[in-house]
Amino acid sequence: MRVKIGLIGLGFGAEFLPIYQSHPDAEVVAICQRNPESLNALGDAFGIAKRYTDWRELIQDPEIDAVHINSPIPDHAAMSLAALEAGKHCACTVPMATNLEALRAIVAAQRESQKNYMMMETVVFAREFFFVEELLRSGKMGRLQFLRGSHQQEMGGWPGYWEGLPPMHYATHCVSPLLALAQTLCESVVCHGSGRIDTALAINYGSPFAVETATLKLKDSDVIAEVTRSLFNTARQYRESFDVYGSQISWEWTPIEHEDCFLHHGEIPERVKVPDYAHRLPEGIQKFTTQGVYDLSENTHLSFKQGSGHGGSHPHLAHEFVRSIIEEREPFPNAIQSANYTATGICAHESALRGGERIFLPNFA
Image (cartoon, rainbow, N blue to C red; front, side, top):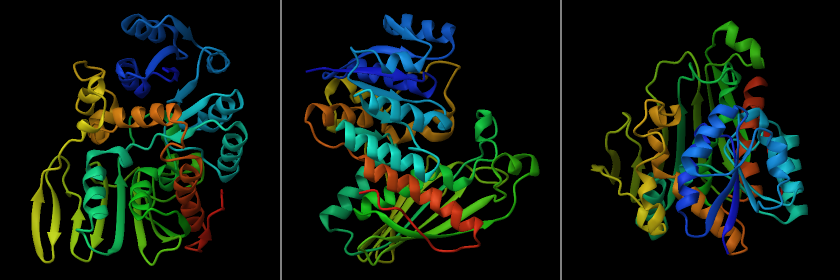
């Protein structure tokens, strides 16, 4: 069996074209982008005959088994719902949606359709995550004691819908690794907003805060997690990180991008070079942990300029999505996990607007 993929959105989404084409169990049968010139250029470059400028037409294509959505954030929920309702497996870039009602609707649509839904969260497939996960699961870190995540990024120069976005509405990169490592979900959240962004930005979403920081109560756990997020008017080099504190060994992300991370053995620190995990992948897509479509082009996507290729996660994401379909199992993260990871940020922002009131997350199960 080969899973026939339809790809919607070809900015960042183009990074996945050669991955699926090189995967032994997948093929790209159709692509979609609003701009016909860019659409045809990529279609010609990758030899893809079926090309759509209307995503609704692609979703209805009977040849397609699965849809991978890489559209702007405001479109994620509507496209995911349409794909599931059309009987397609659905992968979607983060976040899953921007409000709780849409999250509930996607979970319900997945349950009704019995098709796979996977939020394509990069950090839980990054080499750093795999490294720490191995240490934690082996027992070498001892008892898990505390988790911290941060994602600080200046979004100037990104598409206009980003301007003034509440920081926690795009928090999955720092929330997901914490919950995944703890192997649980977020139960409730307390969040505080700090500082102010420019008025011209704040009026777009009614969100004034420069920084939002939250503590997460984890379900069935005595461990607390903390996340910090900023998008505008806060001086900081790009940082997308997580720290994990154990009773025997702790892990801390490097404070400076591209430098070594640290393990703390008791009170003794050790610089560590994190290995790549391409060996977990089929041979044909292993190279994509370190290279992408735009590497040799002047048109380098901002996710690579600022995000360093997302820790080599792209082929791991595609592989998990494809294999989950073939093996007839739920992907990781599945619909319920994806909804919880996303709702954590949505509820955190609501808590900040209410002056730090504790907000309980919906039960999506």
